[in-house]
Length: 304
Image 1 (spheres, rainbow, N blue to C red):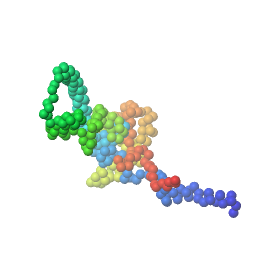
Image 2 (image 1 turned 180 degrees about the vertical axis):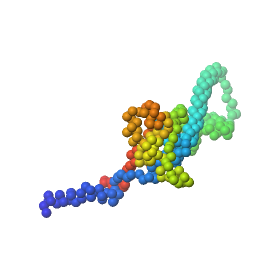
Image 3 (image 1 turned 135 degrees about the vertical axis):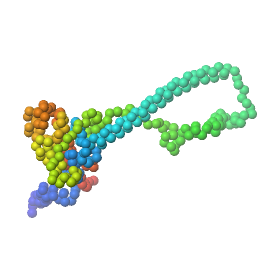
Image 4 (image 1 turned 135 degrees about the horizontal axis):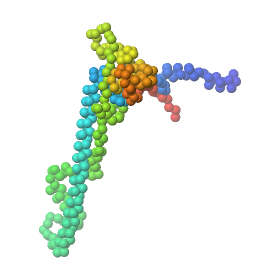
């Protein structure tokens, strides 16, 4: 075998498809995987509770919620924002008080300095019988004064003294600043501003079922299109008509409604904003959008 033949044989040991199969068997690199049914939220389930909605409402972006769950979320966010605003207002009042205290201290220092200069004209005789050791020099005198000041400090004031073991009492430690909070409530899914008046009532049409004793959650086919009577599921996108709240398939919207923009249930004129497509996606554990595929990463080999 020639040298050229050996090189060709070495480079063509595996074909492209064989390499792809080998990488899947070994688990090296990355590969695409489709989410299973347990990872996908049903189209009629609340985006917060992940359970079928008892009283469904939808946002203008197409995210479905149970009314009780989303109202509780909005109330909780408002209470949290009010709490943050109170902390911010308290910080502003403390800042104003500190500024006024600084101004008063500055004025008092000016007065004390003036009185000290006035009194320093007359000489003051030192007490020779004091406990301060003057022979040791001014440093010894200063140290004795500091010790006396610490001994005379109350227990409450001692707690305010600098401490290198407690982070909040270190000499250079400062309290964390509170930023002015945003008082708006945002949708937990779209992250856009959300108001209670923007929630739109949704009216699902029940699918006929011979077994009336079977619960709605246990049914595989729960709802149908309000116009075509087709079964609604995650496999086919659906939309909500804003004026009536009825749920229909997007196939009917694209095929008929977008031609004349007439509501098939009321006969009234529709606008493009009156068609709200319900968002499909994954649960909180495996977030997924309209593309229900994800990338799975395997171990990777590194060469030095």
